[in-house]
Image (cartoon, rainbow, N blue to C red; front, side, top):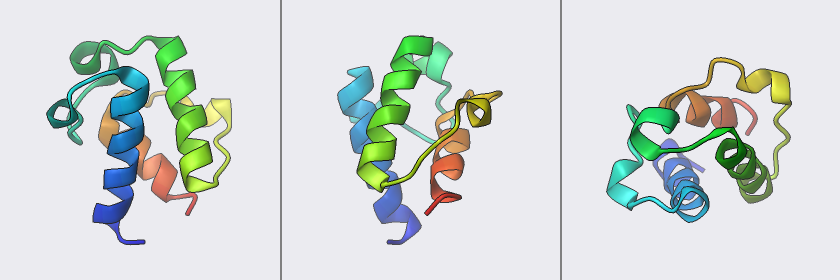
Length: 79
């Protein structure tokens, strides 16, 4: 799976879980500021991403993840 394909899957999860418009899910988007996501939303998103990509993300790895790009890099580092 290439990066573009992986980002499409990531974006699809974010749109479904966070209930946002697809064009808002950009690498620069900040979860709290741009996507109105609280910590519970992020937990749900991580669970959806784990299922979608067949990975496991430890809670401690989410420290400091504030942007879509940071989360995407975390996911792709596990593929």
